[in-house]
Every structure is written in structure tokens, then in C-alpha cells.
Length: 175
Length: 259
Image 1 (cartoon, each protein chain N blue to C red):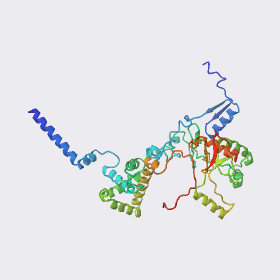
Image 2 (cartoon, rainbow over the protein chains, first blue to last red; image 1 turned 180 degrees about the vertical axis):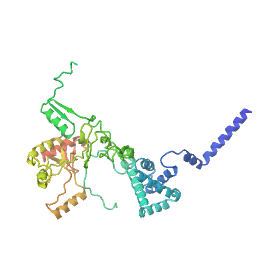
Image 3 (cartoon, one colour; image 1 turned 30 degrees about the vertical axis):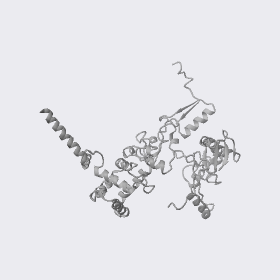
Image 4 (cartoon, helix red, strand yellow; image 1 turned 135 degrees about the vertical axis):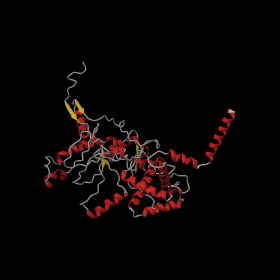
């Protein structure tokens, strides 16, 4: 009898686990509940989404799986950077605007809609929106352009080039 | 005990501080045969070994060079916002000083002192500077003029190796220099325009600096084997260019080739 009950329990547990694996969003609930960090889970998602909108994959070549903000870990850099390197006032502006974006459901919008929202922010006159946009945009670019893959493979970085050409001829069509 | 004799502890000269002045003083004194003791209050810094960030690429810093807030406090005037150089900053509670009027005091606290903190800008003073206090009526007149300093400027420059241009300006005297760094296209244009519009009144001069300047792009030095690297000979080549120009000298068997 004990063997049967234990078998039943095992069977139920197995079914439960299999059920969890099938239902993807359950993992997100677990992630949300177990999330620790300066930003909330939704805020981190927002930062990831913002970074992806600003610098999508295939930055240097159309369609190529070339680097973008996500593949270079720029979103993770932003999360760390904003937590540790911003003054208190700037952090408050950031979090305030992130909450506003959260209400607008930024993460769920399509790519064009997200870009439209950011265009709006780039032209705004509202101080806190201007500041937020400037913070996020400049630091996403900063994080992206200092990533190893980008610097070495695309920006021609060398530790000690051994030359300095002050004035070079470059074709003008690459504007 | 037998080692610690009074003779051993007696020096001809004692230099306090191992910075730009102290380091040079020690060099001169020892070269002239004086037994010299150098006292430095700060920590040892061995050349290259103790430069923790010199060869780091930007992605090797946790915040790519930005300094986290928690590390920025307690540094007073030396509130540098760069991870690459933070380790030279002196905490403000280390030998604090009273500031009755604004006084931004950058101090070194390590072997090398401020010579590890400077930006390597090196210009000679001219009589315009030496006559400054007398002409403009502040402080005390310098007891010396440019002609007194001139041979000593040359003496130091020959040893150190600066890079810069020779512009023939009396307010910014020419130095013994290696070829200067090229101006960028914008800087060149700006220089030409300044000359056009202001002639002899305003000059654009590339910063003269204590750096080894690169071989100009139109020359390449190669060994007989064209695949060999040129970098190892760079300093010797440039030095010879300045002193012995235009005679090309052999450098470990390299041939000069214009590309």
C-alpha cells in the first residue's frame, strides 16, 4: 500500500513538473518572486527593451547577426551602471520615467511602436523626459561602443597601434 | 649589527620626495658620484609592474571606466571620474589642509609623485612668463630670465625626449624635440585660417608633450625581411631622426624605405 501511495505521489509530482515545463509563463512568476536587485523585474525588462529598441541586432550590417545591444550584454551593463554610477537625483528621474513607461506597456509594444515612443521622448520639452532620454540613450551607446566585440571587430580597436595619422582621406559618401 | 655602521648610514645628499624634482635631483646627484638617499613618504611603484590599469581595455573595467558613486567620496579635489587613474588619488583625510581661500592641491603619495599624475604637457617658459610678475604687478619679480634657463631646458629635453613642433615663436620657445604628432584635418584647417586672419598675432601650436611620437605614416622602417615588425626600433629611429636628420642611420640592420 505504501508503495502504491508513493508511486501515486511520484506520478503526481512528475505530472506537475511536466505541466510547469509546458506552461512557460509560470517561470516568469518564479523569476518575479525570486528577483533581487536594485531595480524591479519589470524595470529591468524595460531597460532591456529600451536598449534593444535603441540598438537592435544587426547594427553594423542589415540583416546580419551582427552585434546589437542585447547580444553584447549592454542591457545588463545598463542595469549595473544605473544602480551604481548615477547620482541619487538622476536615479529618481530614471525610476520615475520607467514607471511611466511601464504603465504604457512599453515592453509589449511592437518594434515600430517602441521606436515611435522613443522618438517622442527625443523631441519632448518636459525636463524629466529629456533627462531620462539623454541618460538612457547616451549610456546605451557608451555601453555598446565599449563592448569587446564591438571595439575589436567593428571599431578597429588596438591596444597599442604604434601610429597616429592625424589627417586621413575618407570617402565622403559614408555620411 | 656589524652591517649597520655609521659609514653606511652617512650620505652625501638626501633627497626628500621622489617626484619630478626629487627624481631628477637623485639622478643628477648619483650620476655625479654622490651617495644619495631618497626618502619617499608614499608607497613603492615599480615601473610597469605597478601600473594596474595601463594595458586594460575599456571592457575590462567593471563600469567601462566610469567610477561608481561609492568610490567617489573622500577624495576632495582629486575627485577624478576615471577608473583608469583612481588609484593615484589621495584620500582627503590623509594629511588634510586648511583652505582659507580656494586652493586645489593635487598631491602624489607614491614613488614618482605628481609625475604619475601630470598630463605630460611640456612647454618652455619664455621671457614673457619670467617678466610676468614685474610687468603685471603681482607677486615677486623672477630673479632669472629665459637665457639662464635655456641651457638647462635643453639638458633635460635631451634626456627625456619630448615631441612637438618648432614654431619659431619667442613666447613659446623652440625645444629639442622629436617630430610632433600630426594635427587632425580640422586642426590643420583651423591653423591655416588663423594664420590668414590673424597673421603673427595668434598661433595654433600642437601641444608639446613628453611622449614618444610615432613614426610618420609616410616612412616605414623594415628589416631585409619585409614581414618583420618595426615597433622595436621606434624610439631609436625617432631619436636619430631628430639629432641626425636627414642622414638615415642603420638601426639594427634596418633599411629606410619610403612608402
